[in-house]
Length: 365
Image (cartoon, rainbow, N blue to C red):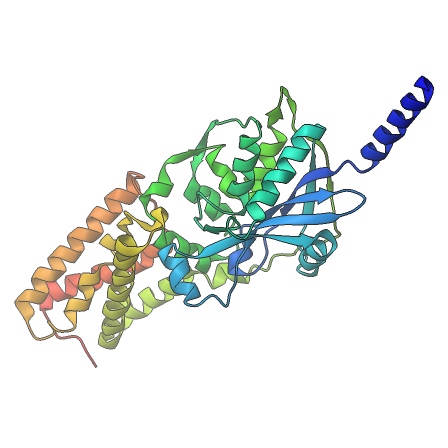
């Protein structure tokens, strides 16, 4: 009888061990679409009965007022569940690498982690308000692992969050220009290895360096799909903002074409209004305290109604030149970094304002 009980116990343990789930963190390389350029992170649960992905990065493009909600910081993301095969096929079709880090967890830790994921997947819990730095597909996984006892380092890096973001945008200079234009000075402080995990690439790296119960968290790594190494075209270098704006600078300097000034005043002033609205009304902390507004100033719009008021135009020009000088000092002192593409823009605006001071002539067609 005793031998029979032992045999039943061993068989039960063997059957249970055969169905022990493997828990992994998946990291997907960046894609070409704006929403995918920073990569993606997800959690895989696999045993003999299931192979699924818990994906914190799902959202609905058909959400009413999608763009407004995204800009204002009110867009809802959600936790979704997908079949692993479908997930990998999707990323393979976009030629994006999917890498896997299997986690070294005991039965109790696996059970707790899966229960927590299922808790988050409940209809009342699965939605969350997206935040680029604080709450996204990577930070949700990081915070979940911390809750389960995983220890991450918090080493100070010699880079800012802006530097980390720009490293993903080397071949997308216009997106980099727009991103740097919209992000405020809070991103220019040196970041830490812990904070860097808002990006999937750095979450993957820090998981490799993390521990649980004094042991390394990752027990194995591998790629889950085949992908081709992309050959980057050099075209982006010749169509970048600094090249295009430099051409405009040369044309303006040679011709001093007045209608261009109307376009510059309207464009720069409108950008300034957008930055001001985002600073005041957006719930994204990353877009507040944005000192780009000093050179991309809403006051440029005043040149249009002040076209025939020469003294007021001169006074306004003095103010705007002073604002540009302050912008340059802020940039040089690293208080806030600006995109290099604004250099020819600043030169255009400087020439234009100096002409208003010297001649006070009318703008227009």
